[in-house]
Image 1 (cartoon, each protein chain N blue to C red):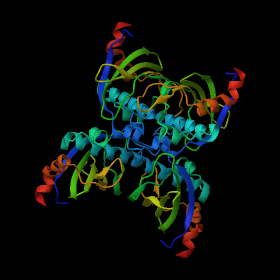
Image 2 (image 1 turned 120 degrees about the vertical axis):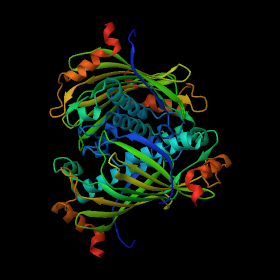
Image 3 (image 1 turned 135 degrees about the horizontal axis):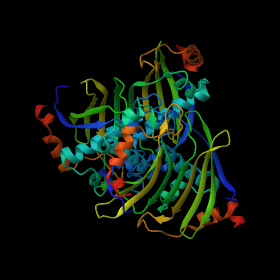
Amino acid sequence: MGTDIVFAKEVLIRFGHCDPAGIVFYPRYYELLNALVEDWFNEGLGIPYAELLGPRRTGLPTVRLETDFKRIARMGDVLTQTVRIARIGRTSLALSIAFVGADGEPRVAFEQVIVCTSLDTHLPTPFPSDLRAALERAPSSQEQ
Amino acid sequence: MGTDIVFAKEVLIRFGHCDPAGIVFYPRYYELLNALVEDWFNEGLGIPYAELLGPRRTGLPTVRLETDFKRIARMGDVLTQTVRIARIGRTSLALSIAFVGADGEPRVAFEQVIVCTSLDTHLPTPFPSDLRAALERAPSSQEQ
Amino acid sequence: MGTDIVFAKEVLIRFGHCDPAGIVFYPRYYELLNALVEDWFNEGLGIPYAELLGPRRTGLPTVRLETDFKRIARMGDVLTQTVRIARIGRTSLALSIAFVGADGEPRVAFEQVIVCTSLDTHLPTPFPSDLRAALERAPSSQEQ
Amino acid sequence: MGTDIVFAKEVLIRFGHCDPAGIVFYPRYYELLNALVEDWFNEGLGIPYAELLGPRRTGLPTVRLETDFKRIARMGDVLTQTVRIARIGRTSLALSIAFVGADGEPRVAFEQVIVCTSLDTHLPTPFPSDLRAALERAPSSQEQ
């Protein structure tokens, strides 16, 4: 990538994430992905996600998502989740996210495109200025 | 695509699929996707999915998944889910799946690659012969 | 109970409902329960659930729920879900719901109390008249 | 209760936990409940949950669960989850669990009975001795 990690957080693979094959049921990865982005907004960018999606009526729907499931993860594994910014547009944001095992090997990699919308119209809208400023302060954007 | 639909099924977008923005929370789409593939195996291919993943110890993990979220879907919408076979390999299967609204417009489109594995080793293995035969009998394979 | 079944519907226990122990992960039962009540409203009572919870701004939160998990259910099982009305109040409704296996033995039994609320205030409110009439027409209410 | 809290942990109510009414979709509370018990085992009791349910083939199914949903919780709320031991039996364990808001008011209260089983037979079995010892060391058991 060449871009920096802008946020990282560990996650425990729980019993409830796993299927009868003893490995993560893949829809659960997307719940983890959404939680990670939420944590990044709250803890990394300093933009309270619940305010944004709630009273500020600003939506952040995903419009495109590519996923490579590279290796299996099992109950009890602790994965490191990393967020990189691939591109910041006027109304959209591309992220490269990886979930990496304790052995350093990636389990899943996501390329996600999020669009900023008005929750009243569900139409794209420019990022609010505080969110844009926070995104631009993130490490990777200096490089580009 | 040029390939035929090999399975179609309607699904109701439920209250529990939707988020505070009133639209489908995208991880729920992947639960619907997995249920659709399960129904296709059971009802379309005539290969009981629970036997395959259970006593037959045959895994069907997803290794790659591209998703385009094209339009929002809301609580109460009924979507038609369609499965097309993009490619049948020795140990893998590529599917093109769409969820289409009552207005004929797609809501989500998936390009999914599934691999056949042994649940004892989690390594790829050729499709069992009954599954391969059922896949090859599906309409789209005649065309190719 | 002595009360009649007012709605019944089969459900397939899916791969995605089950955990590494090969049996239903119990939080999934509550998703099935909510879907059953939704189907009962739509298909049994003739009151579109998505309209009620959406434009009609009428909430139906659960305020009390007792569950007995009586026997395990496995991937591939088909359960018959039955709804009985235990009590209809002015703003609340008590239901007795069972999920029964093909062998006639119950897997799970729920005693659920639902309250009718305004989604603007989240305070209890009498059932809308069409919903009350539909509930009172259901078989069990004749008995009481 | 009179019994002591044996484990406490905060949880953020996320966007993905909430429904179109803007409050927690109640099946999500049970996912949080299961995660809390898992964290208590791992962090409080010092018994790795994934080992227990995995290689040790020891199941911990819930057989009875009473829930009172006392007040609504919204996206962005941080709840304090507390675990109390109501009773330790030879093969079963009764817990009183509460999720309490920042205002000190309970949102949900659970009375949960968990049984220890063999994952080979799904039949009840006495708690393994390390788990029993850890349970008995927990504060509330001193009192009884």
